[in-house]
Image 1 (cartoon, helix red, strand yellow):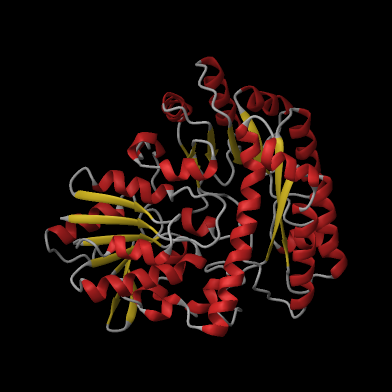
Image 2 (cartoon, rainbow, N blue to C red):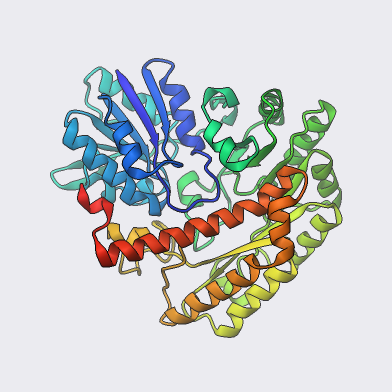
Length: 463
């Protein structure tokens, strides 16, 4: 059985690093089948489509992670089915899990719900042997025009059983050329015990916190070191939930001299011992995301954040004391948010961050704001995601203006421009520079959307 796994074009993103889940599935699939992996995230849609249609595959899996990538995923699906009607199309990822009907109504045959490392190989074996797949746990499919979901798959408890992603397993040359450094994404844990109203992570991965052993994390750092990786981004939602484990990881990296510059995200309340920050720095940590979200206690409660403003400020001070960069995130546009509250969020971000970015609250599939959004299941509306073009509040102009005004202040700062272009080492420079690239992608995406809306149809409507 011939299989292709696709990371689709995404018109806005932080990095051109492929989905770790998709990479895991590829490594598992190639153990028993003729499997190929295609990262189309850096390539134009038309070019990537021609490349996909060049050969016929029995099964094609597409990562349907980000909502703004869904129009591309559907366009791929329609073109594939037109040329190769017998090819089985499988989707997976956050959006696919939360809104499978968007894909099943548009040529996809199956959706892998949630974690796929157990479900996907089961599904492949079932397809290969021509057996009935409808009893497999953790999938969705269409039957008589209705979406059918099977019983949920149990969460993976032993994270050390996941494939080891060796840097030489994938051809990332063009990603390295784009960034100017060799970087690698890894995950050391899954699951979040919190339930933030704007987030879908806890639904995707579950509230149960599961993690790789410190020894397994050390192995991945050693492999990265052997392959001359310059920077590692741990994609965990909160690497410090188990502070003792984080300390053990840092100690092992120091003991075995496996220090590769790394960054991750933590909840500002997770670290209780100040010495942990020092240990993180000694092990190679150069940047931490602490995600302030809002400069207002009232809005933090509405977002169901588990901390107070003082906790975020204290975490920032501890990180700065240990010479670790702080990247903060803010969200504006909560219905009922006042102008003063919006401005206060920017004030806190500027006072308590080395670098920061803001998004306008989006109704992502599965979060607390999805059902009230009038644009849900409208594929063309999904093109607005990730570009600060969706508001749930009636003061649309205010949020558009204030967002772009502060973007200009941030990106025209001469000190920040200097850091993005000339800061040494390159791992630090990259963390400043990537924000300029993302801003460029957002501006370009907005421009193209306006042009296509006024002068032509979206490419997704062509197929």
